[in-house]
Image (tube, rainbow, N blue to C red; front, side, top):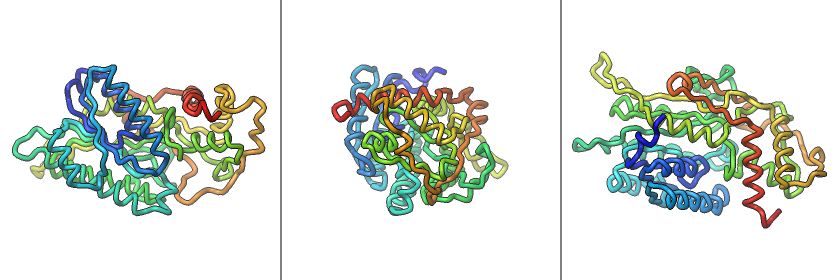
Amino acid sequence: MNLKKTVDKQTILVTGAAGFIGSNLAQRLLKTGARVIGFDNLNNYYNPQLKEYRLRLIEDAAKTSNGSWQFVRGDLADKELVNRVFCEETPSNVVNLAAQAGVRYSITNPDAYIESNLIGFYNILEACRHSYDNGASGVAHLVYASSSSVYGSDAEIPFSTEERADRPVSLYAATKRSNELLAYCYSKLYAIPSTGLRFFTVYGPAGRPDMAYFGFTDKLRQGTDIEIFNYGNCKRDFTYIDDIVEGICRVMEKPPAQTQGEDGLPVAPHAVYNIGHGEPVDLLEFVDILQQELVRAKVLPVDYDFEAHKKLVPMQPGDVPVTYADTSGLERDFGYRPKTSLREGLRAFAEWYKEYYENDI
């Protein structure tokens, strides 16, 4: 792979740039010499201070690289702003990672998902469409975030992109599947090369505080109970952040081919891939590894009574018992499969957590 050769001097728009995946991707792209335009609204779904921290990491990466960094604070639902960014910056590649995340939050705050995940994504698609106006070269590749949540609860294991994925069990999942369908339609009608990536339980340093590994750590440090859903009878396909970023970069390099169908219209240059570790882990095993690494990093004392703080509870609405990625498509087309072990990834998280909250521990 020669990412530098591919993206050097190109302008890449990364939405959700202050988010977990977006900030790590931006840092990686800057190291290749790319011109990166970050876009984020820095909402308060979780503590914006963590988002500001990630932006500082990007700024530091820009100072020590040959790339350039520009940040736009705004909302994807603001169509006028989105169009202005596209007109003024003319991105050659777009990576849309901005979205309202969270399965449970979608039950109590549905408006946020419609505004960000549907209206916001529509605005991105429209801007990509009009990037070709008046003979302009336009966006060469739109890569966008989907989710393993689209598979619902009745998909065959492991989850394959060949599944219909038309029975979502949360509004969040429904919006991400809608993104895939909208992207396919725009690719078909306007020949916009686009690729959707179904991420599987992404974790790592400076991750999202609403994710289990981060939330568990906060609660254990505070001496409060952690709730393990479905009485511990759940499995998750945990994927380390560096593996996700590597997958995105490889996919960026290879947009779906533009071909013409028998109807005279373009065959939709659109593809969807899973990015997961491909090895689901039992939640109780996950918690056991996490607690070991938290003790090792001195986030928690050696004599911490973990059993006293574990609470087994029923499954929550919108959750599924198992996630498990079939990564054969990613391996076939890009020669890549995530490889970071859960212990290695949780160790990196625990060490980061200790450093980030040093004054509080």
